[in-house]
Length: 239
Image (cartoon, rainbow, N blue to C red; front, side, top):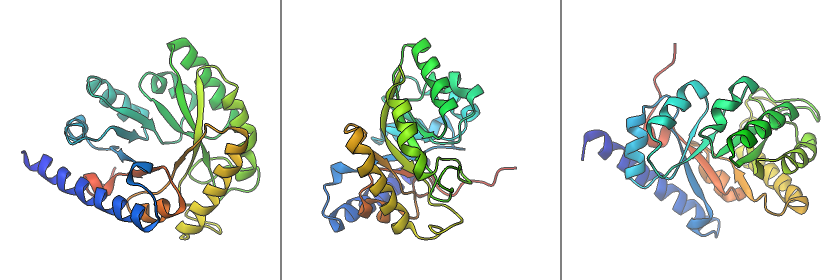
């Protein structure tokens, strides 16, 4: 094993142990939670090692980094998740590799994604990004739609060719009533998920929790956790 593979294997084992323990504490089966490794700022060589170690879901948040990395790893059995704020001029590129877009937060983006998914002959899984720091009709500091806008946006995704409504995603906000209150934030997301599934029973994905708070997300009922630093290490400062 190379030094890097040894390092990533140890980190993955530690994260796996944390998820397993969190599932046990919550009375859940380990199989109920999918680990997505956030590979942003790390090279394609790391993605390749992660695949060798059994990782099947990876996430990126910038198309200019993700597109060449996905192309370099096209031979691997991976599912790619796009988790960053997405500009409509990047949609064609993102649809070329992303199996899931977790940052759906406005109608214009849905329309652009549907058009490109149809053109490419692909079906893209979509998660509505919920902004818990937004007013009832606004958007959040890190993107996302206010809780009051979820139902309408979900209906639009569900009715759009080439798109599949899979569920909800959130990032714990830095400001507002949920800042620093991970358990409360994830609980609110689960309530919204319950509401969503009444109209869209197949939209069962709940993407929440990162390296620092995955236990709280699992306790709340998250189906997917997005872990970067705990697997790949602390990212170098950009710029």
